[in-house]
Amino acid sequence: MFETIHFCGVNFWNGGVEALTQRVFATGGDVLVPAAPAFAKILDDTEYHTALREGHYVILDSGVVALLCLLKYRRAVSRISGLRLIEYLFLGGGRSAIERAHILWIVPDEAEAKLIENWIAGIALPQARQSFYVAPMYRQSADLSDQQLAARIAETRPDALILCIGGGTQEKLAWHIKKLIHPCPPILCTGAAICFFTGSQARIPTWVDRACLGWLWRIFDEPKRFGPRYAGTLWNLPRMLWRYYRAHGNWN
Image (tube, rainbow, N blue to C red; front, top):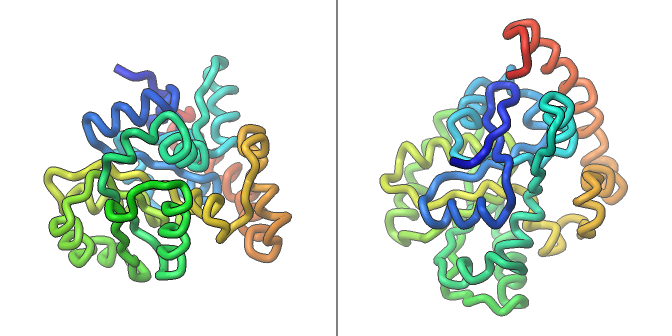
């Protein structure tokens, strides 16, 4: 059994990226990467909270959530960012598994699909093993039972799905996919992490990511887009923690 850290009703993976990817590609399951802005709203989005609670592997992407877990348990916690996960799989020790895998990328638009396709070519991975599905705008819960996506998965029979759509939505989509597809291939909910490699968002240096300063880097790069998002987190996260504690008497 792998070790988990329990926080706000969610079991977070507390191990290394190598052990995580080996387990996922051997036994399946979904990897969820909740960012702080989405995690701060778990009490206002019960479906999202359920998706996290029922996820197979939820990793500590958020530096602030990792810090809160560290303070709560007073022992080492393992933080794996979405950027670190993509880097390990495509540019590091996990590449051998990816080279053999047929991947279905779920992307927000054709432009992002093209950027990923070009990046894949640039790192000399077989493009014939990459497929793309442009996700519609999921405006309500019912939209997430995406029958067209289910049909595409059944048709292409990928070895893994990589979801590159918005945080807070991709986790719920993964939850619905697991109910629609049996057996379900591994699902990696990496959100915008691929954008740091393709160039559609700021390229975050490794040291910035490991220092948990990716949010600040993104604000400097696109202040109008990310400034309000992370400013809102400063209000929503403490508020959520207070409400959760009042309801449960602890942060388990």
